[in-house]
Image (spheres, rainbow, N blue to C red):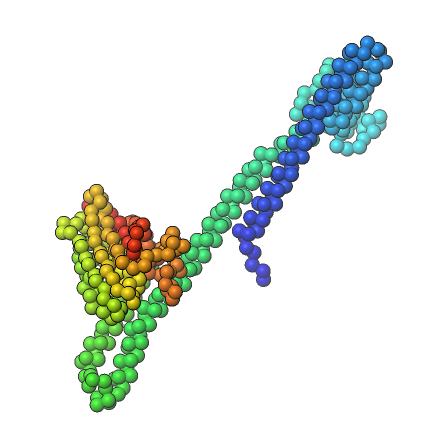
Length: 393
């Protein structure tokens, strides 16, 4: 079964409609110009007949004028007393007005013309019923074509936006699944290793590990699995928010990273935290907010891997309504080509990255906490600012 790509199909229809509309209007303009030239010819013929002072020339001028008027393609019906059809021109059908059936058909058509234009002349004697020129009839369709074009443009736009959102959602879910598999993989591999150790005799265990030490390590891996599971459970719901101390959240993150930074990098990395006392509390979820900050800091750690450097976390109050938290590193910075989309799923400056961490941070900060996360312009390194609304604002 062939899957129809509706945005492409609608865009094609729109282009075809636009081309047809341009051709259509061009034909109308050309016909109007022809009518203008014909009016000039009629004026010239009238002037020549008036100045000729020759009855024969005047009669010829009248015949010429009649021919010119007929050439305008205006539907004309000439009637006499008693609604008798005397002559007609430019009717949309062939008819013999000399027959009774032809008389009836032309009179019926003349009544339709009268709905658009009143007859000219003495209706009790000689009078003319007339319709619209082809150019005018075509102009009637212009508003409909414009409305159709606008509606089609709107439909194409909506379809394109919907397709982009669907594609972004699919990328997000794919990246999320990879991130979940990655975070679950480490503790699961560790548990598998501890299981193999437990199967060994006591004398063959590394460093003579006893059951208590193994149980403690297994408990740590299980806690990590529980933490990962709880995080992903919260990201898919609307968690309850409470008043939090940003100083405490950053302090917990500092303690968490202090034991892990030496294992994550070979070069020396200095972590500096500058959170002044008395900072306003923010309304948030401590698990998710911790996760968002952890993702940003881990991104900074990856930027400094193999080269060392400094990571600074500092917070400031903004107008009593916001708390600004900035994470700055002395790494190589974000490449210019991805600066505008660094928070989108699947976008990463690392060759092996999945582009999940910062996308999750944006969802947590903006979607859950009604805050704002952004990449700031800096001369060197990378600075990411997170703004959170104060709890009492």
